Length: 146
Image (cartoon, rainbow, N blue to C red; front, side, top):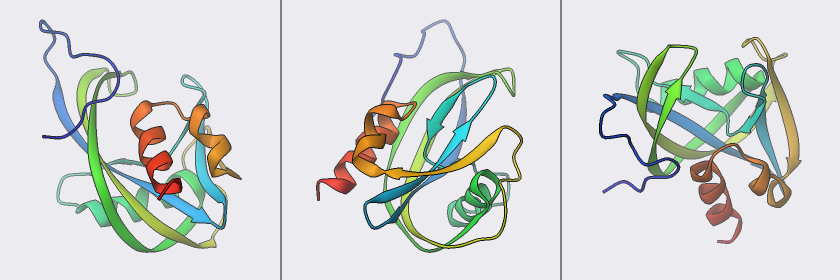
């Protein structure tokens, strides 16, 4: 059973499963995060949806690059969590199954490709309470406290 974070699913609402891959990208005590502007204004682990025909590792590499401009290496799976949410950019309700990985940030190739995204380096312990969802925060916290 995959742990759920956030809102309890609504009995009357139909959700589509949306799998995604997300990265905990550490450099010393700092973590590379993505700031997503309007309409969210959220700080989050970089990552996103796994497209049809794409594997989780491939999606992780693509999403981290799109959201931060960084290339990563040596991804290792930590686990997964799920959350139920409305995705306004797709106008649908989703059960997001979030696969979380650690990886090494290798090189910054340029600015993020995604509009309204900014790559941010910050102290990982200070980032925990600022992350936009409990699943991201819990995985980062367990990674730091190991």
